[in-house]
Length: 215
Ligand SMILES: Cc1cc2nc3c(=O)[nH]c(=O)nc-3n(C[C@H](O)[C@H](O)[C@H](O)COP(=O)(O)O)c2cc1C
Image (cartoon, rainbow, N blue to C red; front, side, top):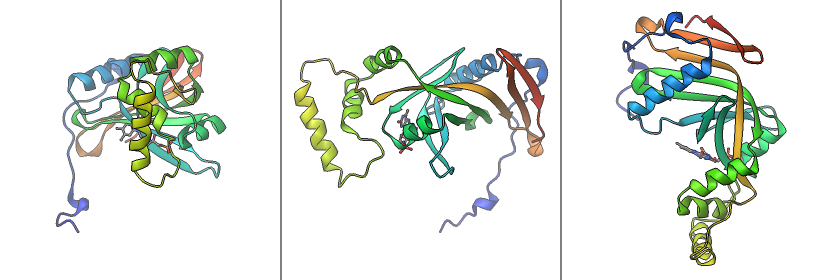
């Protein structure tokens, strides 16, 4: 066991605050600002986010994915449509995202509904990926049980031969999801656990209510 007890680990957050005066009325503008600051801070995987879904039993399931697109519509990530997460999203399109930018002492929580991105959007992103990642999408029947690692290596070698000197097409079972947000919460760590929390709720198309929450 660790000599240090995790119960004794604590940080007093002092870097910054988040006031109503500096928070735009549109939360996507604030997200854009915070993401660009996370990128500028050279955080490892600033676009890494936890994606929470629910399974058929109604139980929560969470894992990391990478944000690969962000605009006025919402948040885009890519995955295998046969994976557990994708099957869960197709059955229940409500999902949540969490970003944790430790170096900036910031968390962003997002909730909303997902839809599949268009085939054209998935094609455009797939064609921008490195060849190795494109082959990986073909090789991996994501979330299924496999006997060993060698089957992956073997399949990769087969596909490298098959697509030698050829463009690799996007598998139809691989593509994006777009999460349209109805809630975003911005959390900035503050001293003495009195953190700043500003929550935005979508009330009507394009209209957000901003509220301060107790930490
Ligand atoms: C930093 C990080 C980023 C990841 N990004 C993705 C991603 O963008 N898409 C994806 O399908 N899996 C990604 N994964 C792997 C997932 O966490 C997960 O293992 C995989 O998608 C299978 O999840 P599922 O069985 O719940 O569908 C990432 C893992 C890590 C640690």
